[in-house]
Image (cartoon, rainbow, N blue to C red):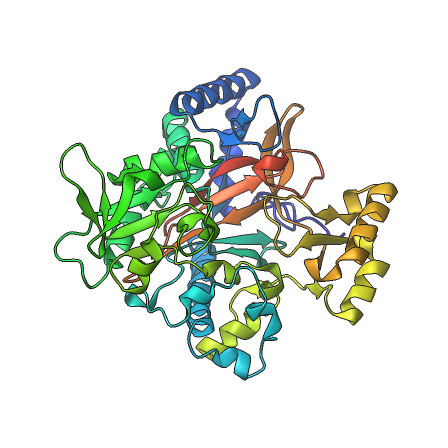
Length: 471
């Protein structure tokens, strides 16, 4: 593996400018200070109920995500560069999704094989010909980014369906401001706490044409047993909108209504955190007990806006990821500002042969996988694990892609043995409506185990506050 880039120490070993005061601050912290801060942060998160569910475990399924008190820091110039690439990508993804459900020009041009779109479960035929408000399909997007050197960033994954984690970004910032106000006083850190206001503004901006006056916005949740329920409730509270389950909403006389203690209230925009298949038992899975019967017909008729639109998941499909550079060029006429990680498609015989020959060196992922499950990290796997995975790969090669094991950048992190570098990624959150709004920073996830590259909370990862310094 290539040399790991330390974001604080830099390639030459000297402290990089964005971290100058952070490094000085770290030298003033004693073990008692750190222990006290971590205990305070944990107490804050417990009071707030910030947990995530671990499926498949009978005990202790609700957990706190570990929080590290050393912030990750970006200079303003670094963030401007990242933001330009993120906005370019988001605009191209929305144009791509629109095209797939209309003229399909990119398929006719042969830039993407038709079968990986049309035969994909994430492609929703019911969306063909539908024109959502402002032509936006993916209103809320999380772009997963990794860094490998001073000036090299890669997009690891696009999350267009229902990206989660924004509540952790907001709570991490609140905790840091509470615990270390003096540290903030020494830096000009771009705010993230206005995200809920920006989210509400974005949702209201995509209200359907039939909406007269101020739009009524709700969040539709599967319920308390969903792993991200805390985030659903948190965002509803922060935006000042109602959190609804399927039974709270109903269709009547061509519109969507919410049950209230008084008369029903008409709803214009639904930020839904329910998967496509369960959204409407009349259009998709008839056994869904958490959806709203008839909501898809209303949506197709332009009487309600669904955020994100059904069918946006086609852009999340990992086999599509390999074509995103072509997608950006096709719809923008520009070269991608942010690069993809080089990727081998196991559906391709030549790529598949290479992957089989180099399994110990590669990261192999399921094309429908998420959360760090169902993947192989070759360099950290045993010979037995590699051979077991090889059998799975041979059985269904089309279900996998492979990537080189990147030397993800590392940032200083508190461990049981003191401050040590740990690998990180970044999920900036992007809002797309009347304009594209990018929250400065986003969610930094950190692999707390020494040498681990897996940052997902479900696999033992933690989070950090992410700072963008203002000029």
